[in-house]
Length: 230
Image (cartoon, rainbow, N blue to C red):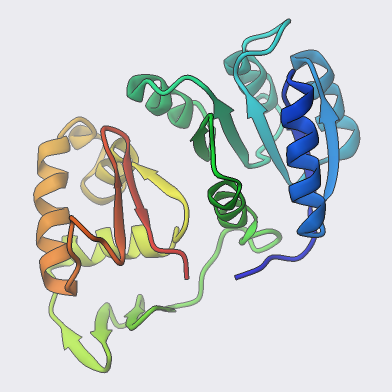
């Protein structure tokens, strides 16, 4: 799947990384602006109105978390965090603070571009989806609350359907455990990660997904889940 060209802001203090990303992004048709510091990145975001930001955390002047916080004061631009920091708690904290995704250095450019496509997919649509999603051999109808696989119906409970729709309507993007629990069960259940794992297991069994070799639902341990990109 491809996306139309977009304005991408790369905020990273490592010149080789910025050069590498520029080459890869421009090869995809995107327009790239670079910034080597947090302050320059914030200025560039205001001046160029990017459609996505790739943000390193280890900047020389401001920590990337502060850059994210300042951006979120006035912008909802999708932010993909790029960092050597792989701590799960930090990933969750950044996602809860407003980042849309997180890629750990060293990274595969194909994975990063796929994550970026997920962030760009809903440009100008207000992140709205049609009532019917078709992903691989699954058909998910939000209005009728039905699911089919190769034309055969799959019977889900109300909560199972709500969880599947949340993941599938965000295909290619990371949905944190807390976000899934709050969306499907309410704020009081935001910490019930074991409860979510049980429902994910039930959902996988019904749609024919193998946790060891997933086709639909991919686990990011300790952080959340990502549905296969349509």
